[in-house]
Image (tube, rainbow, N blue to C red):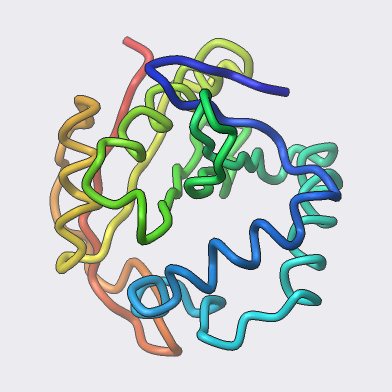
Length: 176
């Protein structure tokens, strides 16, 4: 599946994305490792393969809808975005995103967020999409604000980062 707009696209993972995804992670490991515990400077082809190959079953089971972010013109991989932590009875999902080091500060995450939120509301019938960020992750908060997400406050001990419970900022998009 592909969704395009504003010069960027999001598409589902394919088996041939293993090396490209690994290279994107390695390019960005310095800054991503502070946010994502799975990301590290020795991220291997095997780790990438395990992740890429697991995306289809997660999709098929309705557990997570993961996409790669790419530039429409060149098809260059720019990052990843997903709707996860699906709460079907309440039609809520979490939205997570990251872009590679070379794509930072170019509005890529905001464009991809608009594409995936449209998918979430229109195709998955979600009523609420939550964006949860660390208080110090100002770039992610700017993305949430740029796409019109409502800031709802700081939630105490909302995330577990490297084994430690930490506070998080909550933003939401609603289908209203």
